[in-house]
Image 1 (cartoon, each protein chain N blue to C red):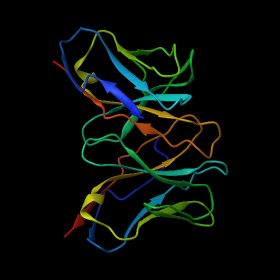
Image 2 (cartoon, helix red, strand yellow):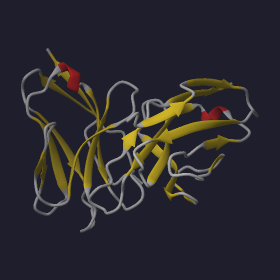
Image 3 (cartoon, rainbow over the protein chains, first blue to last red):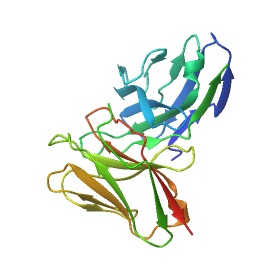
Image 4 (spheres, each protein chain N blue to C red):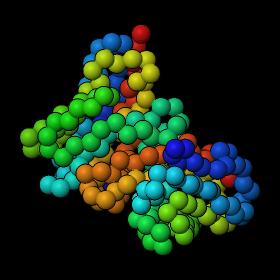
Amino acid sequence: NAGVTQTPKFRILKIGQSMTLQCTQDMNHNYMYWYRQDPGMGLKLIYYSVGAGITDKGEVPNGYNVSRSTTEDFPLRLELAAPSQTSVYFCASSNAWDRSSYEQYFGPGTRLTVT
Amino acid sequence: DAKTTQPPSMDCAEGRAANLPCNHSTISGNEYVYWYRQIHSQGPQYIIHGLKNNETNEMASLIITEDRKSSTLILPHATLRDTAVYYCIVDTGNQFYFGTGTSLTVIP
């Protein structure tokens, strides 16, 4: 199993550009998540999905969009990139069928700089 | 909103036990306590979780107080590779709230 993979690893965007961060998991997990981590801070949840076709907002959803058309993929879309979106983005997945098993598996992250 | 409080940093001598405390005084009866760690800028790694009983696995032990308002993560024999930021998280259902964690430095 490759686990959770993310592409790209690094990206520099100009203000106003858009891009999609890709996330794929091969563990057949039902839950998937997107987090951002600013320097020296903990992770903040952007969006999550409890299954294909179902997404919901997390703590900091503004400026982002997601979709979940398959179990494996959960792309994160940035429209009109702003310097405040400079961050490291982590994707995670979990097999959360009950509350005793919310262990999340994280990808390696995408480091995004908006200038 | 962060629902946990952790000291910002701790040191531990190599080979000794590292005891990392966490306060979660507003925890509800069916909310689990999870511990993760993050080494450098890698993705966080799951360590252990529990509800009310103490838990142990190959990485660590988790001690939860009887009133469930605090817990302690124990790394029994810390190594240099355990230097990381450790996050204590209360599961609120679908969302995890990561605070700023405890930066543990293992000293040779």
